[in-house]
Length: 100
Figure: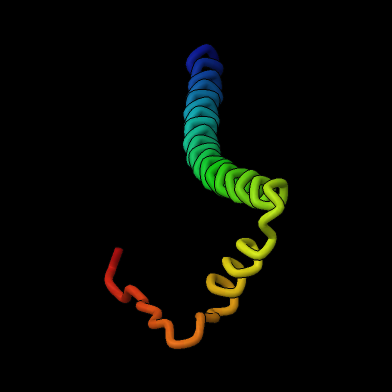
């Protein structure tokens, strides 16, 4: 009978080891999924930042071209129209209010 009592304690730790390994595996899978979601979000942020950078670089090139051409009045007029909302005397400005 003494041998049967020694066999039972071995089963309990083995089951605990299995449960612990399963819990560790589940945690690792969950951590992997969370990290993949974060990576995807950061990649989208990076793509948006790159698009904004490309837009700003194109705008800088256009402004540099205007400055190099010596036509500062064109630049001043564009800024006055686009940023400040100015218009020439007796000029009608149409604003698009549609979706796109």
